[in-house]
Figure (spheres, rainbow, N blue to C red):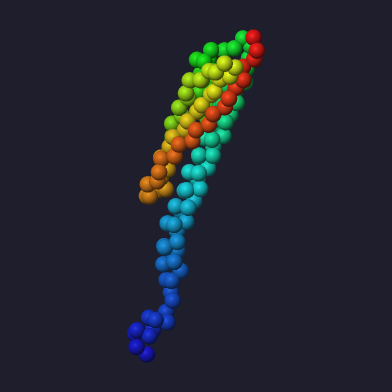
Length: 129
């Protein structure tokens, strides 16, 4: 039998080659899922902080905008990869709007991705005085 036929029938090492091709893709998927999980954690942290700020804003006597912003900043939690920005509350006649923004670059190990910005707002109706 010729060497070519022997090599053609030999399948030793095929699993190693398939493994070498599949593992980097699998690792990138797992890392991507992890990064999306961090986004969801930051989203939950923003919602929690906005809820705490809203609770503080509804107290009587009404706290100042600086106190509300400080409370929201104090209660934020989430991934350390991005940056939170707390906007000063905007005041209408009978309400305040609290806004938090989270910005992070989404990279998938060796593949750069877009910058993701999450913005959450909560409208708080002030107590009648």
